[in-house]
Amino acid sequence: MPPAQTTPDTLPLQHPQSKTDLFVSFTWLALQGFGGVLAVVQRELVEKKRWMSREQFVEDWAVAQIMPGPNVVNLSMMIGGRYFGLPGALAALAGMLSAPMVLVLLLAALYGSVADSAVAQDALRGMGAVAAGLIAATGIKLIGALDKNAMGMGVCVFLALVTFIAIGLLRWPLLWVLLSIGGGACLWAYRVLSDADADRAKKGDA
Image 1 (cartoon, rainbow, N blue to C red):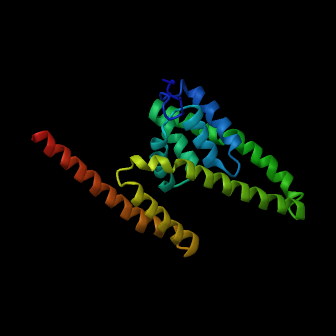
Image 2: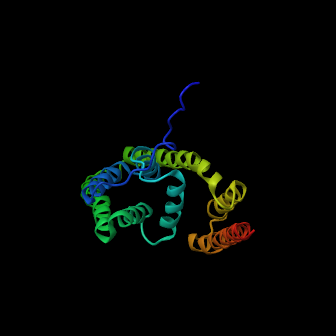
C-alpha cells in the first residue's frame, strides 16, 4: 500500500517563534505584496509557514475585510496579538509598514519623473491585470475551505455571486453591501450554528 501523500493541509500547524520572527516574516511578506497581496499572504501564512489552516485563513481574512484599515495590516495585527499580545501586534504592524514605506517613497519620487510616459502607464495597466489574476487564482484555491463552513458550500457560493453582482455589476457602495448581504450572512450563520448547538444538546441529553 503506497504511503499517504503529504499536502499542506495534512501538515501540523506551526506558530511564530518570537516577535522578531513576526517582524521579519511580515516584512518579507509586505515586500512581496505589490498588487497581489492576497495571493502572497495566503501562500506565506497557510502553505509555507503553516501558521493557520485554509479554514482559519478564510475566517480571519473575512474579519480583516470588514475592519477599518488595510486588510493585510489588520490580519497581521490579529496574528501578532493572538500569539504575543499587544507587543506581537505592534511587531507585526512594524514589519508590514517599515520597509514598504521607505520603498514606496522612493518609487513615488521615481514615478513622478515618468508619470506622463505612455510606457509607464501601459506598464501599470499590465501590472493591474496580473494582480487581478493573482487574486482570482487565490480565491479559486480557497473555495475548498468552504466545504467545512457551517452554512454549506451552496449558500457560500450563492452569497459570493450576489456580492459580485452587487459590487461588480450594480456598483453598490461597499458599506451597503457589507450591511445588507454581510449582515444577512451573519444572521443566517448564527441561526445555523444555534440550531447545530441545540441538536448537539438534545443528543447529549438523550
